[in-house]
Image 1 (cartoon, rainbow over the protein chains, first blue to last red):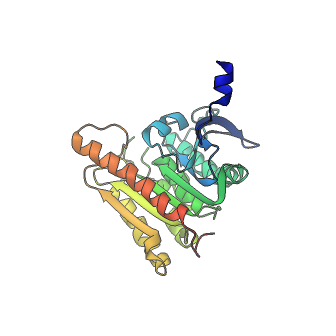
Image 2 (image 1 turned 90 degrees about the vertical axis):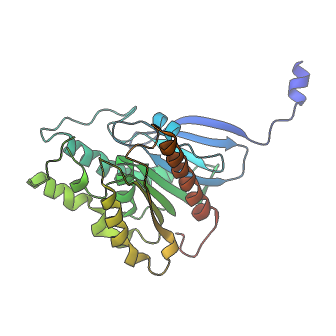
Image 3 (image 1 turned 45 degrees about the vertical axis):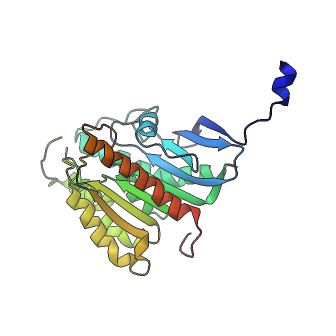
Length: 161
Length: 113
């Protein structure tokens, strides 16, 4: 039996889901790719307020033609909570969005260092708060070629709270 | 969440530091797809239309790299289908996201960075 297994050819590629933390910022992400496949474009996925990388992956999965990096936004998922502010949720929203926007470049650098990723083809996608962070990140000119903003405010003025 | 306007100092400061439309020129030439539900009660679809309008002049040389699509049946969520119509719209949105990245990440372009 063992010999049979050894001699059984592996499929050309195998789906992989890995957890990583981008340091020193401490950005947890869920990396999904096909092991053994040629380098592929990658897309960074940013969830909404109160969400997480795991839930967003279920809501908006991309197919195996892409490497995907679902990220926990500041104050969400596996990340420590943001400090409570007397100014309430709007300040927290602003802080989460601005910090995440500043962290996109680090996630891009992480992906460009991965052998599965074609570093010249990286996308950015966000929904709601994550879409806001994605738009704000784009104004800092990260090495991203394509982006999708879904149900995204483009100013803190448009966030009710 | 309520609807109190942001009229205090904090709001004005946040607005200045986060308003993407003030820095629209810096987004070009990223291929940007803006998707929104017409029935979104949390973030009005008008805000997506306003952003698209602000960005449009910056994409004059490559208008195909900027697109706005508004889904008549969608509200804010993209993952809880409450009817067959909403489920179909949410699936269409997922396919639009995939198609956009397929188009603009799979083919090199002189505008890609």
